[in-house]
Amino acid sequence: MAALAATPFLQFSRFPRKEKIFSVGRIGDVILKGGSRVFSVTQLKQRRRFCGNGKDCKRKVSVRSAIAVAEKNEVAPVEMEEYDAIVIGSGMGGLVAATQLAVRNVKVLLLEKYVIPGGSSGYYKRNGYTFDVGSSVMFGFSDKGNINLVTRALAAVGRKLDLIPDPTTVHYHLPNDLNVQVHRKFEDFVDELYKRFPHEKAGIDGFFGECWRVFNALNSLELKSLEEPLYLLGQFFKNPIACLTLAYYLPQNAGAIARKHIKDPELLSYIDAECFIVSTVDALRTPMINCAMVVCDRHYGGINYPIGGVGRIAVQLAEGLVEKGGQIQYKANVKSILVDSDKAVGVQLANGRKIYAKKIISNATRWDTFEKLLKPSEMPERERMFQKIYKKSPSFFSIHMGVKAEVLPEGTDCHHFILEDDWSRLQEPYRTIFLSIPTVLDKSLAPEGHHILHIFTVAWMDDFEGLSREEYNAKKESIADDIVERLEKKLFPGLKAATTFREAGSPKTHRRFLARDEGTYGPIPAGIPKGLLGMPFNTTAVDSLYCVGDSCFPGQGVIAVCFSGVMCAHRVAADLGVEKSNPILDKGLSNLLAWFRTLA
Ligand SMILES: NC(=O)c1ccc[n+]([C@@H]2O[C@H](COP(=O)([O-])OP(=O)(O)OC[C@H]3O[C@@H](n4cnc5c(N)ncnc54)[C@H](O)[C@@H]3O)[C@@H](O)[C@H]2O)c1
Ligand SMILES: CC(C)=CCC/C(C)=C/C=C/C(C)=C/C=C/C(C)=C/C=C/C=C(C)/C=C/C=C(C)/C=C/C=C(\C)CCC=C(C)C
Image (cartoon, rainbow, N blue to C red; front, top):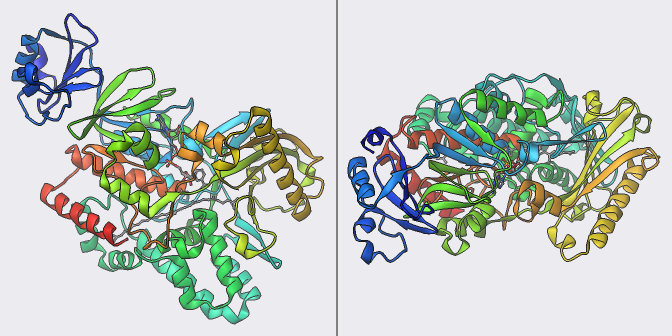
């Protein structure tokens, strides 16, 4: 047994009852796991007085004395699975957090419930088609600047994908025949707006000018954890103007800023549509930083599509993770996060297996993390506050289709957004249609002579509850028929007849395959938010538990969750002692941020 004293983390199984396991942490906390019960050394020493609630586990002892206790209690060592960090879920947020830790030589294990990586940025294959699970508009994927976080995430693990530049981010088909093509070149795009709204030229310049101010500030920073004070101070010192600019815009929303410059209601509705496609809410509820980020990045680095499909990004990151010494396990469904004395110490899988780590990172949504992986009755106050400020966004109804190529007119753009009638219906379920045709850029995704149409529209889970299998399937088909008919009228006559493959997914499909509560697309503000002020970062009220992904700052979107992954890895690395940190400053900043959130 003495030989094991040098091992930083030990685990023993108790004789003769093998199901009892206990472990010794690096600092020597001893935990005896017996079913759901957790015992500390103190409790081990006073077994008769143990009441079973595990509340006493605070006392630290040396590994040597822990072993002595173990020996006294007739336990013997067993093989131990212990990591520096466990990441639950391999969405882009989880993958970036895991890879960023692995390249810092942190021993990291990524657990994914599904059979491939990527979550909503994954892919699936059917009948010769490679479909993107989520949408195919990739921000942050260029060679320019600091904000190209997808490119940077891949580069960190030595990967680079071949990209196809998309000449038009999106083609809007809006009420009153408002047609706007968002060209790659900013000047070409605003020309379209000037033509339609000549009386608002100054307003257009004013609003987009402010967007560029925010974007340029973002793009001039080295992006790391905003919860790490030494980094923040360093950035303030190096680039005070950029930091103050961002601090100024942090609590503001795009709609309020648009109204400072623009009066024309139709143009304001257009800005709503621009925000809606990325946040599923109008401009008044979309943080200015997020709006600026997307309306500028598409012209700065441009939107670029990876040859082979969006799913290739996640596959490359997962391979890179393993190459850098990390591990990934598929079909590993985490059922609960193990907590000892208010500290996350490991996870338990659906098959009962327990795995321990110093830090646990959840890429599940905050709702799934705090209501399913942890006991909802023990939800920390900070999370209750988050749930007051943010609610779950609706999910999507999606249709993946294969069609004969001739049905698309020459020069069809890759991405379209359609709202046929009334502007006031922008946020209603099924009213808007998002359409991507990635084969316009990459023909290799479909059999020769065919295109992919990936269509989605906002939908709520409630519409699909309580139906029999037949009713459910019939409902999906009827919604899909209706959308195809609308697309026939608006864009592609003959679409139905040209269809060679069609598969529809409901919010239930999103819930099932992405493990997202109610299939939600992410958090949306319950009222008018104070910009991004109320959005939580990565640390949580549970010691050693972190969240990453779209229910963390700055929200939905691949580039946004990549940023969340970068921030999370930096904070975790600092807490593991791999990056510089200062506990006094940490505490000060954490209190300051908690206070900021109360203002949201
Ligand atoms: N710009 C675009 O075109 C585009 C395209 C696709 C996705 N997206 C964005 O990606 C964002 C989501 O990324 P994300 O990183 O937050 O998460 P995600 O939902 O994509 O991935 C979460 C992953 O965690 C896994 N998981 C959840 N619970 C688990 C458990 N208990 N055990 C094991 N695995 C578990 C899921 O299977 C999934 O793979 C969305 O906001 C969306 O905007 C954008
Ligand atoms: C202390 C404190 C806290 C502070 C101080 C000041 C400062 C320094 C600050 C800073 C800040 C920062 C850095 C920030 C950052 C931010 C970011 C990065 C952001 C980002 C964002 C992004 C986003 C939001 C994105 C999104 C996207 C999306 C969602 C997309 C989607 C798409 C789709 C859906 C498409 C559509 C389609 C069709 C149409 C078809």
